[in-house]
Image 1 (cartoon, rainbow, N blue to C red):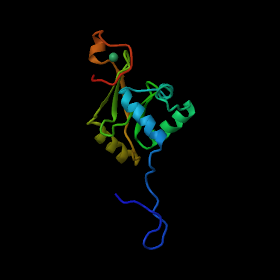
Image 2: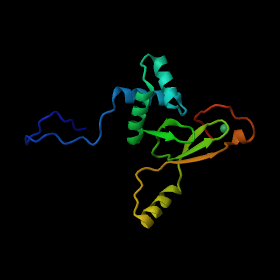
Image 3: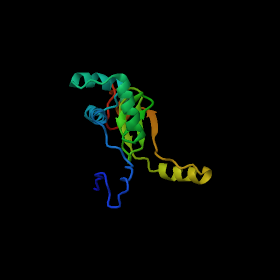
Image 4: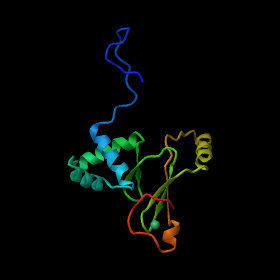
Amino acid sequence: MRSDTGASAGGRPPARRPYRRPSPLDRLVLQTLREAGRPLSAYAITRRSVASGAPLSPTQAYRVLDRLVARGEVQRIALLAAYLPARADRPGVLVCRRCRAVTAVTVAALAPAIEQIRQATGFVVARAHVELPGLRARCRHGRGAARASACSP
Ligand SMILES: [Zn+2]
């Protein structure tokens, strides 16, 4: 990996970095989401940050989450108003309406559909994200827990 130390051989300014290093707050929020293993709201992240001794205000949490979503590192689950670490290889999110469990899945049919959209409209999709609400098997049969989690369908 190349590192810019300031001056380059030709005396020109260093090339602009395409990617900004994550701030300590970004890392804290990402770590909190990874450790939770389930979607968390911005307020839940705030509460956990207080408990961990590195308190974030809700405004800070939202700002960090906006940045992480813009960079594709975190995805917002609109159905739950909560956030998960993003999985680029799994753009589909199954959301159980009963227990709020979330499962990230691959959606093989998505790539051809996106290509079809591009050909028909010229619109280039930057990132795919599909939320599919429903009931996972154990909740269809009345065995689901009544809290959000990330687990298998
Ligand atoms: Zn469920």
